[in-house]
Structures are given as C-alpha cells and as structure tokens.
Length: 471
Ligand code: FAD
Image 1 (spheres, helix red, strand yellow):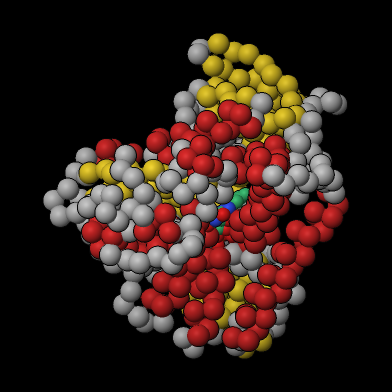
Image 2 (tube, rainbow, N blue to C red; image 1 turned 180 degrees about the horizontal axis):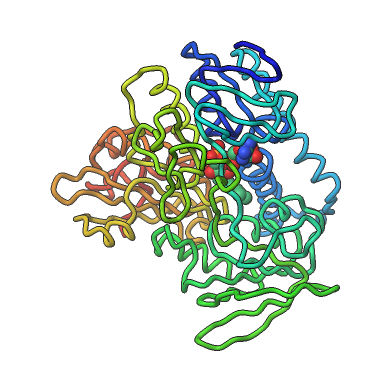
C-alpha cells in the first residue's frame, strides 16, 4: 500500500463493511491481497450488525424470554409481572453490538485489512473520491461494491429520526413503546419488529397489501403464524394498501385502500417495512461501466462480476435474496475470483428463518416457486408431536422432493427452534440427499431433534429430520 499525497493505492478496494464487505475483505487478505475497506460507519458490521439482524434478534430473544415466563404459569411456575426497563434494554443492545463490532475490527486488523471511515464515490477509471475521511481518494486495481440496501419509503416520504413514521432502524432504536403501532408490510422485518413491540406492550396492528403474509414462503408454513398473530396482534388488515400518511402532534393518520374503498386509521406510531432498495444512487456509478437491472440493483454474473471488468458487487446491492449469509458467501466468492480462483456463487439452498413465535424456516425449492416455474415435485408433511405446545402451534416439517428419484429439493418448517434445524436441511439439499438418506441419520436424545427420530418407522419415506407422524 503506498501512501501518497492524501491518496492511497490498493489491489482491492471494498466499499461497505457489512457481511458482504467484511466477508470479502477477510477472504481476500487471507489469500494475500492488499485490501482497503471503506465504510461510512466507524466500525465494521454494516446494517446487519448495527441496525438489522443483530438488534432484531437480540430484542426478539428478550421478548421470547418474556413470552416464556408468561406461558410458564400454565406449567406451574408463576413469575411476577416483568418490569420493562427500556433504558437498560437499549444499553444491553448497545453492548452486544459494540462487542461484536470490536471483534470484527480486531479480525480486520489481524489480517492487515485497512478500514477507513468515509463515504466512497467512484470518480474515474480505477479511482474513488472519499468524503468525510482523512484520505481524499483511493486508486484501486479491483473493487467490490458491498453497499447494501435501505428501507423503501412510500413516494414523497423521507424517513427522519424524530418522525413517528419509522423505518426498521428507528423502530429498533426503541425510543418509545407507543400505546399503538401500525406495521405496514407483512414481510419478515414487519412481523419480527411487530412481535417485539407487541411483547413489550404496544397494541400492534398490521397492514399488508397482499391477501397473505410472507409472500415468499409457502402458505401452509405461514398458516400457524398467522393464527397466532390474530391472537397476539390487535388487528391484521390483509389486502389493504397504505397510500399516504399525515403526521399529527399525537400520532399518524394512515390513508389506505381496501376492496376498492379508501379509508383512514390512526396509530401513535407507524413502522413502514415494505421492502428495501439498493444503495447505489450516490456511488458515482456513471464514472464506471457498471449497469443496473430494472429494479435498480447492480447486474452481476455468477462470479459476482459487474459489467465493468474492474468491479464486482455482492450482497443486498446486487439483488436476489437479501440475507446476511448470502452476502458473506458472495463476498468470499468475489475475493476468490479476484485472486484467480475458478469459483462461482453456486448455492442450491439459501436458508431463511423468520424469528417469530412460531418460527418459520425454509431452504431450497418452495412449493410457491415449484408451481410458478412448473417444476415437478412431491410434497410430504410431518406434524411435530413432541409436546402439547408445538401441537397447539400447528408445527410441522415439509419435504419437497423430485418425484422421479426422491431427491430433496426443498425443506420448510414451522414451530419452535426451526433455526436449529434448517442448517441441516440446507446440508441435505447441497449434498443431493434423498428423503430416505435423512431417515438414516441418528439424532441425539433428548433434544428437540429427537422428534425426528420418532419419525422412523412411522413412514418409510419420512426422513430422520422429520418429526413423528405422517400428515
Ligand atoms: P449492509 O449490511 O447493508 O452493509 C453495507 C454497508 O455499506 C453499510 O455499513 C453502509 O453504511 C455502507 N455504505 C453504503 N454506501 C456507502 C458508501 N458510498 N461509502 C461507504 N460506505 C457505504 N439477514 C439475515 O441473514 N438474518 C437476519 O436475521 C436478518 N435480519 C434483519 C433484520 C432487519 C430489521 C433488517 C433491516 C435486515 C435483516 N437482515 C437479516 C438482512 C441483512 O441485514 C442484510 O441482508 C445484510 O446486512 C446485507 O449485507 P451487505 O453487506 O450487502 O450490506
């Protein structure tokens, strides 16, 4: 690395320090490349650590504790009504984030990755200009764009930190647990944050323009969650489309249409979670050969190359499924391609988990996608019978197989702790397992996976991953 007149040179410049960016940086440094990573946050972690995955999962963990203590009464354990201390909760959250950010920074340092705080804009062939940094610019041989995504506003709306109309970042800051909250958007972000607020005492209503929640997941997996939310939330307005908001001193008036009619409702606060848009507007892409798709995401090939030979893109900014583990894998692929390896992003099963109560998880082919794309498939469902509770939640696992040879194409599950199983499901799909291969795997007893052992003998085609019983 050569320090010049406020300008630096590097083999590899990475813009964005989230899971995609640091995944790429660490792998590239391990492979011997000279790496500079620029992020406008002072520490690594990106949206995922500072305002996404980690804050939401930390708070969901707290709310699940609350939920467990409330349920324990039925099992003969009575706790006093919990006191919710928002200040202490925010402090705990900051500590979790800070400790993880510290670890990422030391991993970068140990590998010799130079992390610079600033905002990067491409300014010419092989150069970026930096804003808010001590260095004015960087010349690079190759660059990886890993700038992530931002919440999609409604037309004309600009999110601001002191508004009552919140994006996910503002909602996770837990400034206030308002008496009422309207969540607009029935995707996983709206459902998870809505569940947090409901557990902390808000009366939560949810509005979704489609007639169902979680449009990318199979409807049968979503069913038990929807049943639970009907009890847990004050209202579910499906098929209702938010058209605009008016903020008043006391709250927000929401204009919406449903069944062709326009109406209004009021809430103390609104969480708008209607999707995410790529962070590439302000990147100076006009100075590069990078092109965008019709949705504004950076076009890439299977090696993460953009249409500019020097530049790669990974993670949310490159579209597709927006999840942290996908971003990290893409980052590692880009780093390896840049260092000369013949490799591509070739993943059959990207696992997704919705951390609600009950949880939903799936990977590989879904029934929705199989039907849409006309893929021949067979479906088997296996209800969980490990406890009264999971039965009450309607928990089950489903296998989607190729009817010709029994190969597993997709696995979905709804119930408790699906996060603990879905990794195994992804492995089965990546290894090309047949349904009967799963039935031969022994799981330890006593664990929740033990329900899977019980499936043996109950159904010859039931994999070992499958709980007892045959739907
Ligand atoms: P990001 O993590 O967004 O990082 C991009 C970084 O680039 C940011 O730090 C940004 O500030 C920086 N940047 C942008 N432009 C510039 C610039 N010009 N110069 C310098 N820096 C710049 N995913 C999961 O897998 N599991 C979950 O449980 C999960 N929960 C989520 C919960 C919420 C509420 C949200 C909003 C998202 C969640 N996600 C989850 C999605 C996950 O956070 C993203 O998929 C992931 O962060 C994408 O990683 P990335 O590296 O592409 O971008």
